[in-house]
Length: 457
Image (cartoon, rainbow, N blue to C red; front, side, top):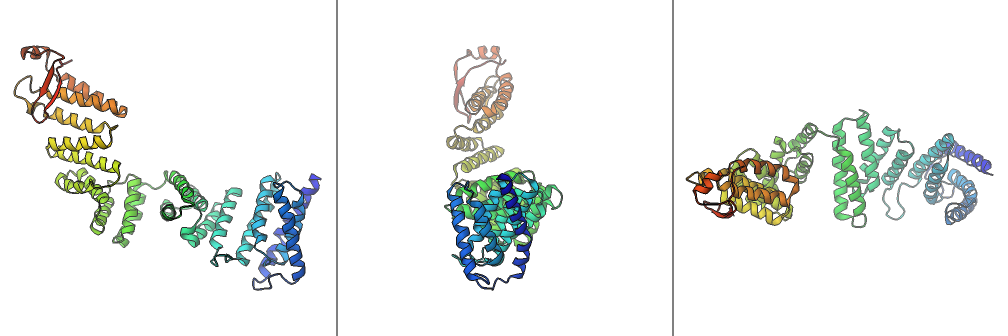
């Protein structure tokens, strides 16, 4: 029985592949709905659908599949306009057969038939019966995904099919189709059949579609978020900063007054950590000029800080503190602290460092910064061999606090503690000033904090 079934299905597959292709080319889509023999067509559709439902209702185990296929083939060949179910059901049937088949030669014939089903559906049913809009792009997308799964080495054909699909569907492209389109693109780039610039451009197009659906497609939002994560991981090895700068410099020159384009350039360069390039600076400044907001002010301030233009950085960072995102605001406060430190306004710097600590209590960096300012102030905050060194006690207190709340910076904190501890007053100096180790001590100057007396080690 099993051999008979295999033989029967093989004959069917061969029959589908050869004469049907000719029939699909020769039969005009403008012909009668039920073909030349309408009565037989209606009967064959009814029979194939009945057997198909039996097979489906059995959990895809019933031998009714054999009867369904025999009648389905007649419909496919003789009345291609009869019902769109011919193609919807055909895809399900042949996907099932392909996955079950062990014989490679037969499996290839099934795959050929599956591809033909997609092509014939496009030819005879290019318009969706409900929306009255073209469904060609969607059908091509499903065809491309199936071809990728069954013939992954046909990369160029897959790429062409999926590229056409996405171009036709735009924002209505399904998330899975976007994932496979990008996989095909990167695969061709690895094989050096496409330049990396195409990978970047494709990523750009796809992410626009994904962003649109995350914002507007509530029902499928999670699908697009998963696709986004998948594509971003695939994108990681591609596009050096030089590649991105080359592509986006042209975009900036041509569309530099388009706010959306500028945001895209900034987002991409920031994501790939290409923020030291002049293009990132120019695009961010241009965006702020066209559409000023706290986020772009923060980015500009950050860049001016890197350029050591502290006064200009300050102007922008003070606008950046209006950002809504708490973590971004914490970063801005920390940069303000660093800016004021470089301007030698230590009290103001400490104030902003504490604001960072308040928003992000598990971040040790604000305390490292405060400790560094205390250590830097030591000599200026005293007038003798004791008072010129007591600020190091306060500095070490901050370093200990930093590593206590943030183990990730323990190494940096320990290095600073070691250096400052060597600069503590000697035991003799402490004794001379009528103090003992462990005593409480108020550090004056701008620091104005109480600490503990300790001797150099």
